[in-house]
Length: 242
Picture 1 (cartoon, rainbow, N blue to C red):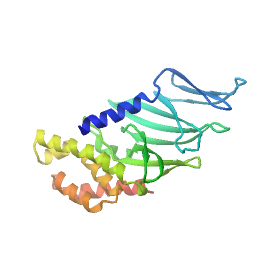
Picture 2 (cartoon, helix red, strand yellow):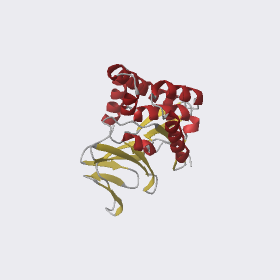
Picture 3 (cartoon, rainbow, N blue to C red):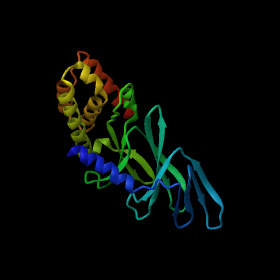
Picture 4 (cartoon, helix red, strand yellow):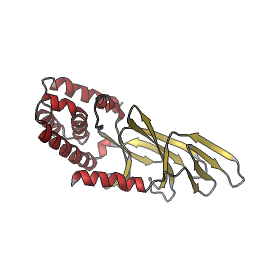
């Protein structure tokens, strides 16, 4: 059921964004047009005031800071060596049009969700630093980062979030348990699902569950170099907080 939930979550998100070759978003002072791989913003007088090229853009509007004004969101995807990577862009649409910020999400499709913990909308992305574990595997996994858009800026709010990290881990642990059940519980199997184990461990740490993270690694990473693996995860999380 949790696999189906995760699939439905991503499918629901994808149906809300436009993958059309051409799409127009009228705002009060200008219109933003997605034309193929290009974003062109024009005034009512047909003056081009902004342009940007993407690889494979998907776009939608959302009032992510809940101020009554929609922002334009573009999720660009890049396919390389059999893996799709995502970048999310947030554009200001009030009075002037400009790129506020962008988020590199790695192989994790970013999504929006409401958070009672921060009293507003959160953008959930992948942590691309953990792509180092996604080499030589067929299934890609990343821990998540949580972002909030306020005062025309994106800020990392991992230290304010708990439920999202735990929810992400429900899916990951189901996947890991099923993989061990089907492939045997030994080090060779651990190495095949190392990205999922690293992602779940990092999510627990970000949720403030240090002791749970430590016990999880002991239970699920069945190789002798567990301390080296633990230190590598901690170093990556330290870089992310710099």
